[in-house]
Image (tube, rainbow, N blue to C red; front, side, top):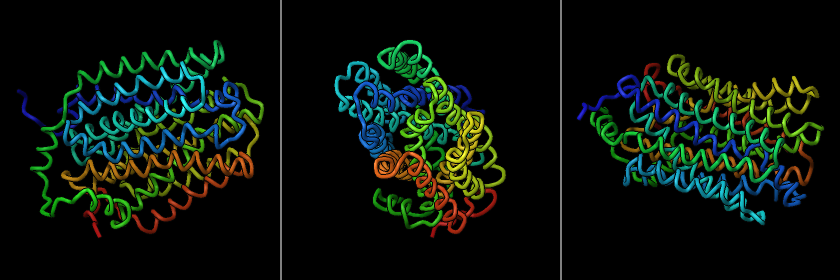
Length: 413
């Protein structure tokens, strides 16, 4: 048996396998991103934005809850088994959408999508952190998120293209069955990281007590200034994304764009998000986490307002790229920052709490976006939601301590 070592280079094959696997995890979300809001209106006659966005609410809450328990489940069963369970549940998603005769079946499909994402995506990111050195965490998370969101983007564009040339259902969702099969097979070849966790725990200089699940929840949510600032930034980011997922197709349909044009705009945002994470995660390992987070939150807000105030396809395209860049500045950096502060013994649990609140943002974003659209209109909904990332950036500027170990000592107050 090979000696267990910590480091990306030392575990390169396993690391690459995890990166490729997460591309297919992200593809499951991208499959729905362009066409499901349109299916709600055209196939099921949903006139209310709140009803049309209900599938995102079910996805967000199920993913958030599963994220919370994923760390504990993984500690008992092992990361690899949880990854495989996530893929097994994912198969239900395209099948339910293909055979749906009522909107409630789409909502249920997205509960299963949330479970799939909560288990599979959580495990790929945790396993990468397990095998990475502390100075490689930003890079590891950046590569993980890059792969996942490129998967979202590619499949958002492909599903829009397939829907334009065939129909909204079932053809795009045949791809979902293929994605699940490939993801499951790849995951069979992934090596578990249990021994890497033991090695990191042994080499940790932590002399403090191991925290209970209740204490980890309180510490991550509000007791620790840095962790709570990170958590609010994560929630605001995905609240914005839940709104974008549900309202961008409706907004761009309202200005007269075709499904193919909408598919490209909806795809370029996560593509930009994924691409720039190749650099932002690694950059945070060098210059620190705090100001990438603050700047990224503010850029997200400004990009949303830009979408509202321009009226040219090329400028919408640019705004979508900037929105992706702003999200990329914070997404891997927030998770790397969590892993800086949390000790190895409770890091997966803290990450689970963070991801619980972060992915609740999907549901809150869809809920608020739907209600605001029904009460006001799509433009007002997008504009008001943009206030959340702006506020999170201000809060992080005031409360967040720099967490990169090489720049400062961890602050846990």
